[in-house]
Length: 350
Ligand code: SAH
Image 1 (spheres, rainbow, N blue to C red):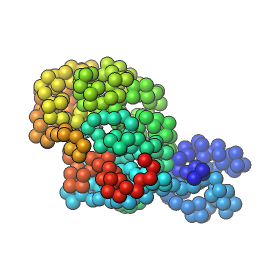
Image 2 (cartoon, rainbow, N blue to C red):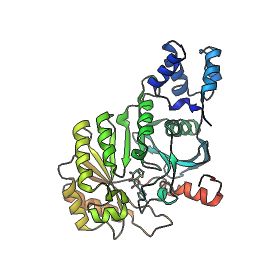
Image 3 (spheres, rainbow, N blue to C red):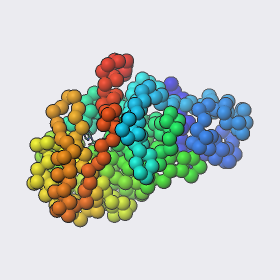
């Protein structure tokens, strides 16, 4: 399919495309509203746009809506997990979580991942391709459509490494915050990265105001490189320097993710080294008992996470244990897609 999905265009891009077609500037606002506020799925529905322009748009652009092929609802806590099929048969996962402050959506940014983190199900089947801006956005629109719920915050923490798909993710963020469209403040967005240091510097220059989450998982280079191959390219001291730069540029405190793994990163020495490492960087540590995946023997439990958290707090760090949501529907990222593709074998893109 060669046509571009019109939902991948930023407002400025749409305006200049329309101007190239000889259209008046106000048409861009009109069309953006149909797309991102009214969320139509067909040019024919844009009733105040002249038929000739609708027809022209139809020849130039398309809609590639992600299709929900499985929707799992937790009986325990309102978590909904969706498996989306993309236009070329790839699959990604999206998780809707309910919090006191509203509903939060965890979106995927790539089909698969090439970062190779040892404990992560998303990386095991390898990397297929980057998602286009419309496919990241589509997870939001189609989840709201399918569930009737309204999302108030977004975390880029699903399948894939967002900074490895930098241009499309930046475009997605611009579309999301456009006042003419969805108009979601990027203060309600968190981006999680395994630590692509060069891209963190680029992101801080954009000053989006979003929260940066760093998947740290160990304060030691040797252990971190074993768990996360990216650490061989960007060491912890380079990563921490980029985090301090991000804070100075944006004023946003950094969130550090720490998946606790028994016998790997859960000792008192690990806690002390972690506290020492983060001293001087305004931060919050999010502890997650590692989710078991079929292919690895890593494990942990909530009790250990609480114990480790207490250790950190006792040493003066700002740490909490992440609430476990959707435990009855296997909500950890990458697992549903793996199961679906293993059982069904229909993904022809391998
Ligand atoms: N690539 C990005 C975002 C996707 S992963 C990143 O690395 O941050 C989202 C988060 O889930 C990361 O913190 C990742 O390290 C963590 N994660 C992956 N597999 C996990 C598992 N089995 N248990 C607990 N956390 C896991």
